[in-house]
Length: 317
Image (cartoon, rainbow, N blue to C red; front, side, top):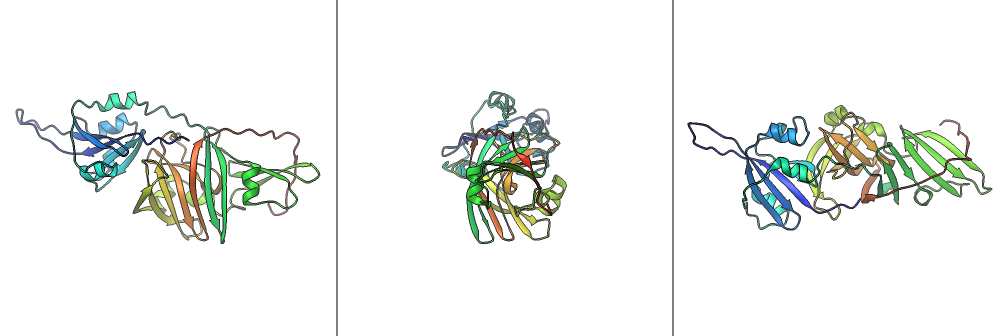
């Protein structure tokens, strides 16, 4: 994915009053921000509920605390709480001054920037993983439309070489890992294995939205996501065994999961989850004996021919 450090929109709740036959008009403050250039703020006559409607969200900005800030980074909405206009401007390398402009049309901005045209292209995700004292570097493809992950031989063998196999290509879909192997004699084999039996992070660790809300809370820590203008936030909770697990989430700029879908993840549970209508990339995961971090993400494509492979199974799997 080519992540652009492009235009952001920050929406801040403010209250202004006009005296017109005792009429009180509530307004929202909107800021268009550019990475490394700061922000320009505007007052718009919209309620939080109206902004949620324009963003196609249900009780999103409306549920934020008083004084919260809504940030759109390439159409990815982020709730910022406890931030002043000056601090928002400084965040995007401005001078720390809340400079106001005029004539901002929030609805037209959303339409002009195609904020609902999410392509959901297949992603090539590079990562590092540390487990049980061993360090690994690899990549895989995440086919968001098909809910499928593919790790080609080059990456798989660098991480977990299999004895007696000269080529290993692996797929993950519907919580099953399908491994295609070629032995030294050129014979082709394919094996199905439930996910979680070979890789430390289990899908049940972040199984659904209800579990996420129950077991994971923000820590207040945040950091820049790679070399972009996006910021990731840390959540802490427990894995399926009750051990502490931390997850860093960064808003997705060109991926939008369907309303009924909570997660689309690949190897090591790296992928996307949807929280309160917003799709996030799980940027880093740390827990008991493991640490995983995304080091790069871009659009990508893959191909694989599964013909000619003979099924086999291993006792106990």
